[in-house]
Figure 1: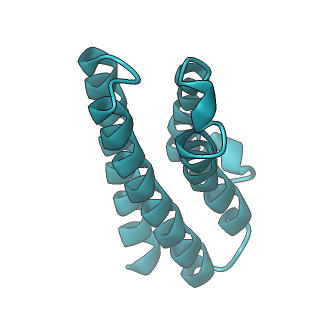
Figure 2: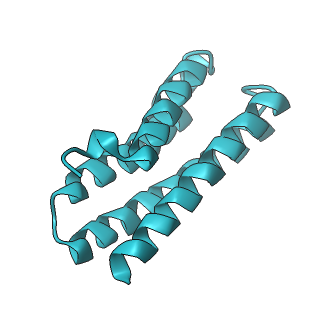
Length: 116
């Protein structure tokens, strides 16, 4: 694989980041240093760790993917919090939850393949 951009997991995570940026634009302004910055940071951390680990050894790449998995779990919490604070609709939450679960499965599969 020549580029991290060719990885399906990175592609889906990148789309997820863009969607998070879109929805958080409509969050209350007082959340700019709270949930907005936190969810954006945790979400783009998924892509950053995939990209950063891509050219490393298999063992190191798997470690970076583990970190990406942790960032994904952090993002999932922020999605729940934002939903419970009524910052977006339930339908959007379900869509984002589906995307996050798909990314999680791809990360898990890639980690397993690197460690086998």
